[in-house]
Length: 606
Image (cartoon, rainbow, N blue to C red; front, side, top):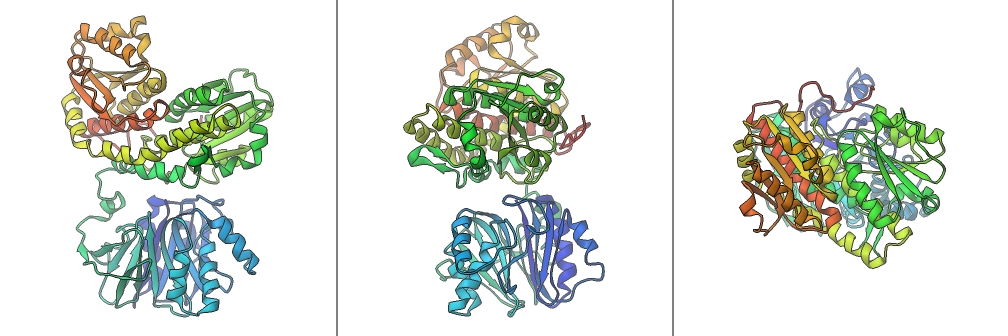
């Protein structure tokens, strides 16, 4: 998730753009850049403050485009920072999203004589526009042709040096907002940098293109058909705009779940062949086929993702899997060799304990892989290969959308390794089809959030909570409890349901509620038995179960319903109501949901 901002008018464009980037910084902070036709392009690795240092005297010009990068393709370096230009340095582009077919377009353009300076997918766009302008030197027509050639997601702002007052914006799957002022117009990823200048905005829809000058704005389809849409007035504050209108970043990030799954899957599935295409593993694909064992390391929520991945990978890849806490791994004497995969899971890619586990694995000859969300992070650099989440920045301390992405990436890895071994193409196709159906099913769950909020309010006075689950949902019992305790500060425990009689059942009474994760899967009947044990001790039970299941009603106080999917993917759906329940529980208690006490987003020290 990157941030784009553009301005055309009569005022000091440089100051406006830098100020706007600062308000967008929650969207990315790997690098920043700005282009003004009258001043040229300036870029810097790191946050906006680094860019400010390079332009102490200000910039000349009344129009320009600017960008904050959350890296997806290419390291977070100055060379890969946006804006990007074409061969002649006349077309400039800022982009939020992923161009899926950039490799084939880049090859075609290189054959036509274009030279590329970065390793980003975005750079193909200005070159593509330039190539079309060779045949017909019309900026608008060439841009429409280029937009019709690219596949993927984008929120773009494009500028041509020889028409400095004009900015073209386009949207496909990534948000774009047009701000309408008096003698000035704006383009941004969200309304936050626009609101200090105007509250009149137009939201572009997918497949739409806007052409702006200081005094006019026109909207078209990709087929160049005119679109009529009235502006609307936004009464949000800048902070609320950054949160997409939601009260907290945590809720915003839970609500982004469908797009997170789509972005994690984008360009990586070949459903008809039952295959996963993971470019980050290409250079070690041969070695992966020779591996005999997997050890997954992670901390906190990433560790629980690994526990779910253990079930996926063992069942479908045929490889034995162990999951270890990064904070304990290197204090043991792990048995590793060159037939062992050591897989690190980390949202930030900087988790100190997980990083040290990777370094220990490398010393012992293991093949090290990473599933990380931050391109260019230390774990991403030091592992032999890996998979990026493409979940975008996660601001809330309690991890939500990163877990959804991690579980999706583990499912992709399961297909990848499984098809190298014993998984049939039909089985791979079934998993791929189920993965592609997940975003819509998550949207269905999110539509029930008012009912989940009411349930959370009902239980918000509780001082204790137990979460239970089995098999694929075993790890979710621990994750659900972790979410509740880290943002609500109450005592919450996770437990394998089969372990209830070995101790935890002693805690149960009428004041100790249990959330039982009991979808209709291969262990459903056993979960019913565990629920009955709790009911016999007068414990209140919230059941999370499959949509349409009425058999469980007589055993439970409340029910959370989720759509059905194949068993290995059910945790990706089940975790969403658990996240919402924890969020609303803490909100009801009046706590700072985004910044829980004593905790930090990234644990970079031991």
